[in-house]
Length: 248
Image (cartoon, rainbow, N blue to C red; front, side):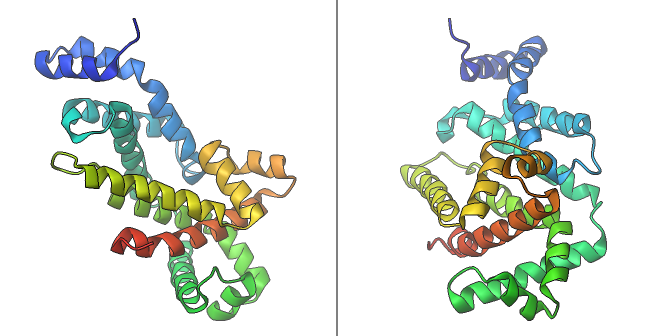
């Protein structure tokens, strides 16, 4: 008989049997590892994967306690969002990104958003460099260094503010809104330049490290970071008005 996690969670919530909770955790460790691996480019230089997985396990246990099937989400979907959010929060609290890099990432995001709204398209590297008062070579070098900070900002926009489950029972409208957001995200990815789309696909959908993406595409790891930063900036500029205001 196929293992039904939602049913086992319901049994645990009724009985409080810790051994049953531990069984559910073990059955869903693959979910924790998948979330940890998908975000590893943001912590691999300063964080230990075991620490990140521990954070994911704690979030999984919280999800087992709080899951409510009446809200309309599968347990695996609900748990993965809780796990991913916990890992993002853990990464942010490490505060290992140098202050100057964080400052540059914020300035870059602001400049990119302004130019995107001005031109109604993603700005070129030359346009960004001019707006930020630096040459293109320096901009690209700084973009490579700021890749993790820019990516974390994008992850926070998607997962913390907008993919959390609603506090009340899920309605048809709420489910349609979440489905629409996923459609808009997929469309935004499709509209990226070819190399940017390749990097984003390998990073988010194949869960590949920057070094592995570099080998796959035959380019340097630094160049992968630059392309990924540019792609994430384009996605954020395109999606933020929709996510915050509800208009694509």
